[in-house]
Image (cartoon, rainbow, N blue to C red; front, top):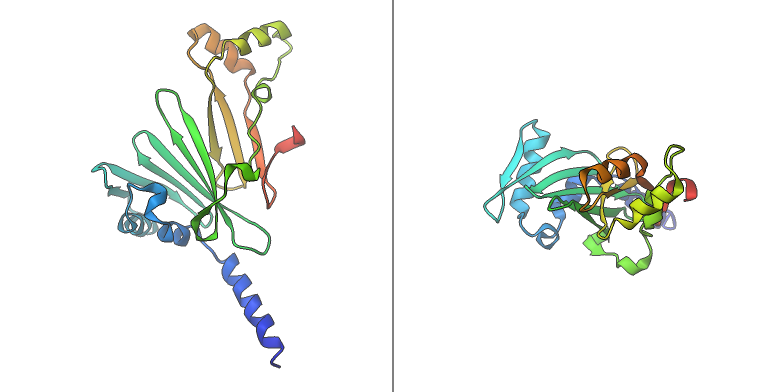
Length: 213
């Protein structure tokens, strides 16, 4: 009987891990992760959205932060006018979920920072290879109507490369999009015809390109 007790405790712990919810992760998050939102701000947002109210609070910068969506494993937060934050719980076998955080800044051109945290909000270093960034060439898909030389010409116009990434609410996916830089409007239109998103999927340990590309 005594031998069964440790296994029962392990099973109970495993169930508590599986029951981990984004609302609890968000509430327990250290203030240093978002900085301008206090714990009371976060708790108020959770309370508002769970009661079908606008989850809008005044933050430390005397501006407003709005929690737009909150599910069991996903969160979408307009932190400031110029900063959107998404969070996604990513399964990691029998251990605690990882927390992926994507911060997208809107100006002058949108860009996204992606971070990964383990339990206790311990940040995973970028050099841990949990996210191989998409190569520049991966965003370009030649169309039958566009000659290869034209594709190469458009690629060379991109001196500065603005890339955003978006977490998906209903799947462990991370989608990267390359935005045309400071080019003429006509050139930007040509680029958009052959630019494509690059999608990564979480495999329990890291993000990998969908389709193996």
